[in-house]
Length: 154
Length: 154
Image (tube, rainbow over all chains, first blue to last red; front, side, top):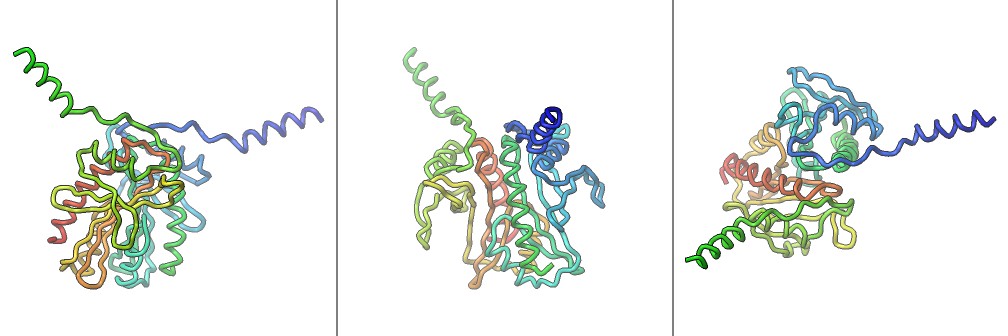
């Protein structure tokens, strides 16, 4: 019984692992690996992959929405800026509807491309920021993306 | 002569004042007063004022573009989220042109309103970030809003 008790305590401790120590980033921002670590700790799936153009990105998902994280202004793998991006090929939204989103909502910059394509993107400067703040962006992105999907009937 | 030399050194020291000490913010983010300080240290004019709807904002200008800073999700005057916003009333850009901006550029979410109005907005989460990171956003905003003005022929 005592052995089980210790194992149970250990299991609980591991399952409710404390958030990793908050870190202040340099001007170089985050690496893709660090981004994966932040997102994983946040309970999201995250893996490094390439997009169709060969850009090295982090792929993730919130509920039933797949999205990517892009990296910009990188030096030796550390990137000062990131972008969350999600796209659909089944958009029926007019330019007016898209303008209505851009007018009334924050965070997500939305645009259409030919062929019923619609994109929602959110940019963040992570240079000299913190891993805690990046986590906040991940949360906000998730919340807004779900709202967006509903707004655009995707 | 010696006095003049000391005065000159002092003047140079004051003019080239060191940036304010970097600070990591809590989840509560920044107050308007703190934002004025950060912007002033960044050599931007900044004053607290109200917009036409009575929102308490920070008004500023970069080169020849007037812009406002809005504050959201505030607790006891400290706000977790901010937004840089600049608007014009002489817009000639079509919905397609605005869509082109949103498609090809980062950071600024652009939209039109009736009566030749166009807005450029950039949202930032300041909760749990550093004052230095906010400084980075000021630099990025200044750069991108200048590109926006040119792109839209404003």
